Structures are given as structure tokens and as C-alpha cells.
Amino acid sequence: GNVYEFYFDADLFGMYLRDKHCIPRGVFHLKGDIHNVVKRPDGSIDSIVTDDGGTISADLFIDCTGFKSLLLEQHMGAEFVSFNDKLFNDRALATQIPYIDRENDMETYTDCVAMEAGWVWNIPLWHRIGTGYVYSSKYKNVCEAEVEFRQYLSERYSPEIAQECQLREIKIKHGKHKKAWVKNVVGIGLAYGFLEPLESTGLMTTH
Image (cartoon, rainbow, N blue to C red; front, side, top):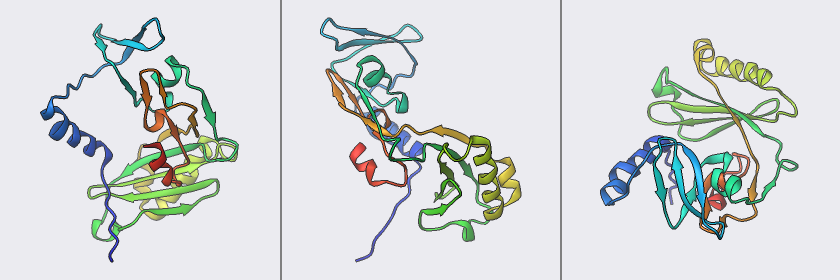
């Protein structure tokens, strides 16, 4: 049979789930930075206090704060087991670029290109291309990686795109926490663990 592959804009998909499914079904969406964490005598979390003074109490807290693992690691003390001795690519430079000629620029697959200290991903969406350089800081610093990546973008797309695109540096934290669930806190996604992005089967394990 035929094999199909679908690409989703993760930000838009998240907003779609929030606005079309979660909120209409009674979910409250509150925005704010965590200012303080209030614990019960047994060490579980009673509530979190936001920077605007709001207090949110719950029976269960799901930590999806990314690599910083704010609740699971920082407040619940879950031990992190690093995989840095096995996975060397610990940095990434990511960007989004527009199509010049979508008819010719759009590909129907994820493209991985070998580089001097890692690899580049190219993921097409309908309205733009997501691309980034995953590399090892043991062999290149961020300035050297940026020069190499912009040269690649210049040759593949255009000198103008290579010069104008904004690069976002990501410091990858390879590994996992020994416990994903501590008392009433559960870590998911990056807050629990992460493998080198080319090892996408690791996403299944993480989720």
C-alpha cells in the first residue's frame, strides 16, 4: 500500500487543539510565569503562584517546561541522567525561511544533509520551510557553526535569505530523568527527556 507523511506546524496545531477542542470542553487556559511553588508537608505540590499574584491549586501538575524541567527537576528533585557521553550533537541553530518559488522549493520529505560537525534538517510546510543545523560544540563554537550554516543556506536557497534569516540557538540537553512521575508531578516532552533529533523514534519514547 501507499505510505503517506504529513507535516504539521506545531504552533498552529497547538492553538488548534486549544481553541477548537480544549477550551470548548471546559479547559481554562491561564498565562503567566511561575513566581513560587507551594508544597504540602509530604513534599507534593499544593499550588503554584504566578508573577501576577495568582494562585493555581491542583491535584496533579504536568511539567511541560522544556529543558529546564522547572517542576520535575528543579522543585521535585528528579535526578537527570545525561547521555552526553554517547550523543555528541548538543547544539542547534534553527530558523524559518520563506519560499522563493514554492512550486520548485517545496519537497515532499524531510531532508537531512551532512555537515562538518553535524547535520542540517529541511522540513517543508505549506507556507514556509523549517531548517536548522544540529552540531557538536566539541568541534565547532556557535560563531563557526553560524558561518557554516549561513553558507549552506546561501548555496541552497539564496544569499539574501542566508543573510537576513534570524537564527535561534538551542542548547540540547541529552538524557532523561530517572523518574518521570514524582509525587503529584509528571514530566512530559523535553521536561522528561530528549534524544538527538535525528533519532526521531525517541519522540515516541518521550511522549
